[in-house]
Length: 262
Image 1 (cartoon, rainbow, N blue to C red):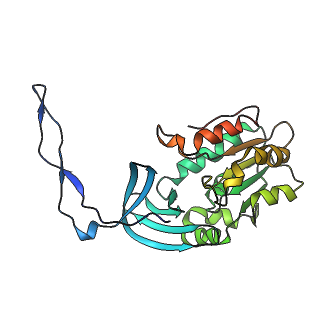
Image 2 (image 1 turned 180 degrees about the vertical axis):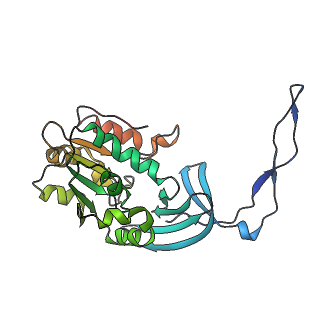
Image 3 (image 1 turned 135 degrees about the vertical axis):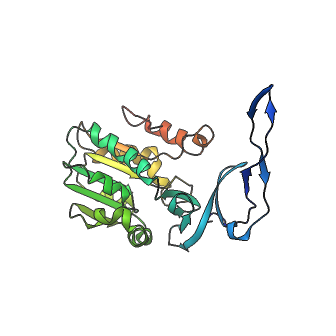
């Protein structure tokens, strides 16, 4: 279910004040403002049973569904265009570089000489963009199961990924990443999991399991020096309970060293 667009009154202008502890400092008071129709579009994402994040919108640019997942593109007032998959915000124009740089550069800098990289997922193209900044890399395989997501991102998010998709170092594979790794005899210096969260029944769920890490990912890493990194969902005080803790605990039973990024 793509996050709902709902009507909200704006809680907003700082109005009035309250003197505290005998000092002249004032505590701002939020005053409920009358509802204005031109400010009524919002995207909301549920974080917990009693916690939601809401983003004010300029417009909903696209909403649809592929064979595997719900896809939406929204134009937010403060973060630019944002990609939504299955109701979860994947990235936004203003700050997507923070996620993608944090995901890609630590493992590639940790490896002494990364030449080959396999990206699981990554249909947006931004992870490949960051990988290709490394001059030592001469081959990148990006494997995403959803052709429609890849085509959608190439069309609507081209400012962020145009150079990556045009690179002759990139090989794009539309397939299940598990099947592609099982077929491949190639070993990779770095394997990256740029995937949606492991929602049960979703297309990425099987790519976060102990058997997958142990019997599929590990054998495809270069002997002795291969590095595996994956996104692991939000890691906040409340949100780490969604998937972060379980992914971390799964990884630590398979790999010798693990370095959680958050």
